[in-house]
Length: 493
Ligand code: 3ON
Ligand code: FE
Image (cartoon, rainbow, N blue to C red):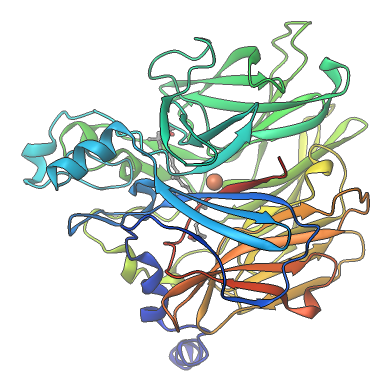
């Protein structure tokens, strides 16, 4: 009977593996053009720039990297001006990118399994880290920054995308110090009298882990920097904020550095998920003035979280919505990520965690069973109660598969809207852009990149956030594909 079910699942697959694999080809060329091939209409009210980051190279001169998260950062910039759109892409000129392009071969070990040719001996005791600047890109304080969570940001020219160098925020960040890839934007910072601030973090793991929190003003200066130590090793990719707290999920993992030192495994391959250990939720007060240490650590059932959606305070409770996996897929040394068995891995699902800070208890409830990733909300609701969220989702209702749809959830009514690009389309991270001047939470657009296997190229899709039923109100066909990316942001400046 099991066999029969398995067969049914394969038969009803919403995609073909070869189609999906097409989105993992390198894009070596850098483009600069007006997008003329447009279906539908770009709303003239949509003005500003969508920046996207992600691995642009999946190989170095034909030598394959082991995992897409190890790929060199490439920035795409889509500018919307009076109903037209312009495209430009450019690689971040990190030291590693320049050196490897010059050498024509892999010179560095990657965090996710990429090794230098020559086996373990060539990789023995090599802890040199390649800052690949591939995870996110933000425009803040007049600076365009490409982020990678284990090192410094790279600053780029927002127009030409030329790499200007590493950013140290007037020396507040020191050489080699990390600046995370998941900043949060507090549009009304209580500590600064209601002006916006950016909150980011970095982690320095070890037997205990130092979490550093950075708060930046509108001028792009770090105005608060404070650190707290928590027991144990941490792999923390994202966090959430409320007006009074920064909240981190310490996923239950152990780290064994020996194979790393011996050159056998990369750092990411030395992390092992612990299904029988609880997840720890670290709550750090943001109130800098009181200099209180009052860090609280609450425990909940085991699970792995990369991304959070949002958090907000309700009296003595904090509500956190996150995408949680039952376990962390291990990066296998002798494997090809293009051959991954989706069905064998647990899907990311949307959960709501309610923390009671008084009795230090956590309630955990499933909101959405469908496999999902890459959530976005109206930026005005960050750290506040909210009603709508949008995210990438699978076409099929159950199990794990590539993202092929956008899912909107109304947390109040429970209503769902799904827009799918299956079978030949593959969905990237959506970004919600509010309609200028509107205060209605879902009044705006959802922008995303879709890889279309039929033409081996990518489309920028624009949906009316209020009504996915209309389908894409505009579909902008690029002249080429963009490899599956990670994160990006929109700026109306
Ligand atoms: O935790 C320690 C400290 C640290 C900062 C050790 C460590 C080596 C693991 C580490 C470095 C972490 C890094 C460099 C993480 C980079 C992560 C990255 C580039 C991407 C993560 C993406 C996550 C998701 C969920 C992507 C999903 C993608 C899809 C659904 C489809 O494309
Ligand atoms: Fe992320």
